[in-house]
Length: 220
Length: 201
Image (cartoon, rainbow over all chains, first blue to last red; front, side):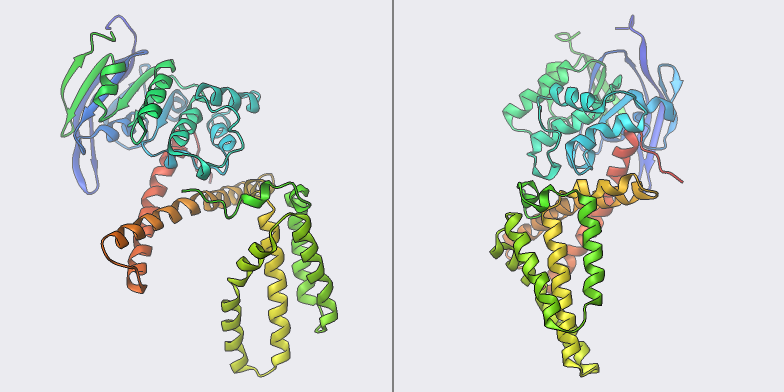
């Protein structure tokens, strides 16, 4: 593992919300290129907060280095964040607009129709371009949310409870989709089966600190 | 939950559905101005009533459905104009005002039923300041249904615990929806920023 390049380095990360002190209490962590890491822990242990900090969406104390560089707006394109609730991730009137939102903002040139088509193919939702989000099932919304970050081809994927609320078959299909994604993946989850199935490393977060981590020998 | 009540007829292959949203919008504005200027003679209003019935037929909108939806606004019109009559006793004026209002709302409703909302919003996107209008209306459209679903869920939870909502409970529900909307807006903003969106000055 340590032969791989360090993709994300977290140094003494601390974070408090206004109404809740010390949600993260000095996290130190290295995540390697193309590594799949699961972060597990109780409700309120800081899993989502940690992902939000790595994604540059919260103002934290400490340092987070992406490819050796401190987080800045230019690095945002390297990160794809899949939020727990797909209704928070897909906010445009049509699926097409949601998927092209990222590429447009990041100034990605190319045939947008092709980009949307390929993104939908990756999540097995061919032909969904003109569908309206409020007509989709929960599982379909999750997949559209994933497609909306695949469209700009980030290198790092932050997945917050990716299998939450999915039926058994939808969950299995979604796990297969996650496995196929190329890149560094950090998954915050209560789904221990998911963590065991695909992660190389499982990190246990407890009250804002890393309590333990273990290498999953089956996936290393 | 599925919400077909706005989008359903915009997908049909009818006369109005085939017209471009910007053309429909322009015609609608001209019609509304025309209705304001129409003199108080019933003969001037009859053609517009006839035209809207033809348009409803050609656009494959069920007449019963259309009339049922239009009737919803009647109580509000009646209340407003009854209150106005108390201050001004010109009954004929108010009858024609009601007629103009009904015609205007009917045409607005017909045009919205036969127009895909996202295509309508996109007509603003390329105009000056249009991008902001496009975003605002897109969000309104998108999240109206989400908030409606949340409202229904909270209401159902109340009923399941033995309380049929009345005025006081609806007030509580509305306050709840307001707070949830605010919290949701924070999360959505993070999702937008994560995809490179920047707040423009």
